[in-house]
Length: 450
View 1 (cartoon, rainbow, N blue to C red):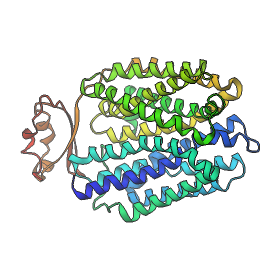
View 2: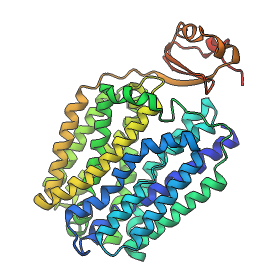
View 3: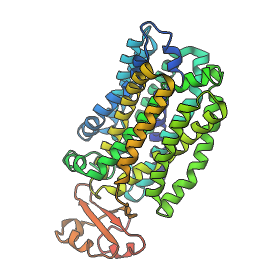
C-alpha cells in the first residue's frame, strides 16, 4: 500500500475503534451499577445494554445510502456527533430510563457502512481488501480492550465516567475524520464495500444469506444475553470486586484468541470451514450448558467462559468470509450491510431477552436459554451449502474494454473466472476466480497497467 492507503487504513481503524470502545465498555460493569438504580429491573438492564443495537440496525442501511448522496465524511462526522450526544445524555442520567434513552441515541450514529465506503473510495482496487481487513480487526480488538478497561474506569470515575470517556472518544473520532482521514477525490457506489439499494431485494431473498444472517443474529444475541449476567457471576461466585474483573477477561481473551487462530487457518487454508463452523456452534452450546450447570464452581466456570470465546472468536472471524463466498460478485457489499444489520439486531434482542429470562429463571436460566438458541442455530447451519473457495478480485478496466459491450462475455471465457460483473461508474470489473486455474496475465488486454 502507498502512504495514502496506509493513512486511510490506520485513521479509519482508529475512528472505528474509538466508537466501538465507547459502545462496549459498559458491558462488564453496567448490570452491577444498574441493579441499585431507582425503578431498575433485569428487563430494563437488558434493554439498556441492547437498545443501541436496535437503532444501529434500523439506521445502518439508510445512512449508508445517504452517504452516497451527501458524502461519506458528513455522515460519519454527524454519526459520531450523535453518538457523543447520546453519551452525554447517559452520563448525566440519574435513572435507568434516561440511560436507555442515551444508549438509543448512541446507536443512531450508525456509521459502519459509510466508513467502509469511504475506505473503498480512498484505496486502489487491489489493496481494498487489506484496508477492509485492518478496519474490521479493530472490532475484535476494541471489544477485548473495552472488557478490560471498562471495570478500571468505573472504579476510578463510576458509570458516568465511562460515558464521559465515551463522549471524549467520539469527539476524538470527529477530529480524526475532519483532519486526519484523507479527503476522497472520487465517490462511488462500491459493489464490494457499499450498500446498493437495487441489490437489497435479491440479498433478502437469498436462502443461504438468510441462514448467515440468522447465524450472526444469534451469535450476538448470545454474547449480549450472557453479559446481562456474567458480571453478577464474577462478583458473587468468583468473589471478584468489580475493578478486578479484568483479571478474568484479559487471560481469557488472549488465550481464546490464540486458540482460535489455528481453527481459522484450518478453515480457510485447508477448506474445512463448514465442519469447523458446525463444530464451533456445538462448542457454544457446550459452553452455555456448562455455565448454566456449573457457574458456582470456579474452574468449570472459567473453562466454559474460555470455551465460549474460542467459539465466538472463530465464528466472528469466518462469518464475513462466508458471506463473501455465498453472495454473488456484485452484491457482496449489500450482503455485508444486511449482515451487519442482523448483527446489531441480535445485540438488541439479546439484551432484551437476557433481561426477561433473568427475571423469571435466574442466572442459570439465561445460560440454558442461550444453549437452546444456539441449538436452533445448529439446525439452521446444517443446511448451509459447502462454500466454494473462490477469490474475490477487482481490476480497473481500460477505456476500450469499458466501452465494448462484448467485454463481459469475453472475460467469462477466461479460464479460472467463475463470475464477473462490470461496474461502469467505477471503471472496474469484479471477479470471482479459482486461483488454481486463473492467470492474471490473461486479463492484460482488458485492464489498465497501473
